[in-house]
Image 1 (cartoon, helix red, strand yellow):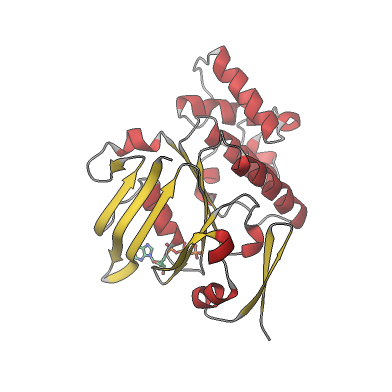
Image 2 (cartoon, rainbow, N blue to C red; image 1 turned 180 degrees about the vertical axis):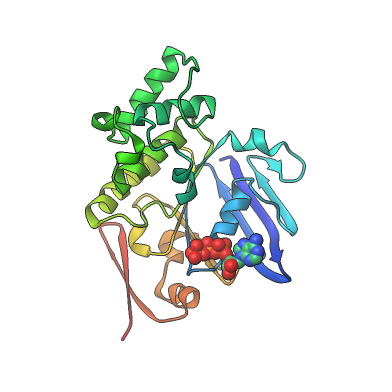
Length: 261
Ligand SMILES: Nc1ncnc2c1ncn2[C@@H]1O[C@H](COP(=O)(O)OP(=O)(O)OP(=O)(O)O)[C@@H](O)[C@H]1O
């Protein structure tokens, strides 16, 4: 097992307010983590640290065995895949899906005159098929549905064989069918031994793909609970995290929560 992320006593303070407070968290390469928490809990801030896009106010963050503050973050970021709603906004609407995935090999957004090796083209086509995008490969990104866009962005993120893949609310705004299709694909990907360590952020237990192994529950910048999902994702911990009582159901390795009357 190789450690890919370690936060030790991390605090992140802005305007005198602790947005993250005393966070300890460790992720190994075989693990698939869900970060669960209400609006404003600090999930996005945690993602910024894990993707080497920000620095803690105090404590230490080690990403892929490098301590933030002592490493070239640009080199480090090239080893991390990250998809958030902001990622999609940077993609030129006219970019074709095949080029969107292929250009990740050169870390550019928008195809110009770069040369791509056959191995890159084959890798892009394989990943496009894996994420069920073959029929859309010649279609412009701006014309895709939300669900198709999410799959295209994830395909782009995995094109560079990242050692850590982070997805910020991958199924937000998707309709039921698109959400379920994406969850099935994420579940398959999560269960492959060849996949990198994965972290997804969500507000909803219904959006946890089977195969995810661990959960970190965050409230007001503090870790409410963290550990293997089967023993950590409990009605008690949900109540502590979201501040109200829930009935938690598990069926077919999927979770559902409804407020207790
Ligand atoms: N740079 C900043 N300066 C001041 N406040 C900040 C800054 N960054 C985040 N915050 C505040 O910290 C809190 C946590 O923000 P964050 O975006 O990490 O939460 P979140 O869990 O991702 O929320 P959501 O689920 O709504 O996306 C919020 O109240 C936010 O306003």
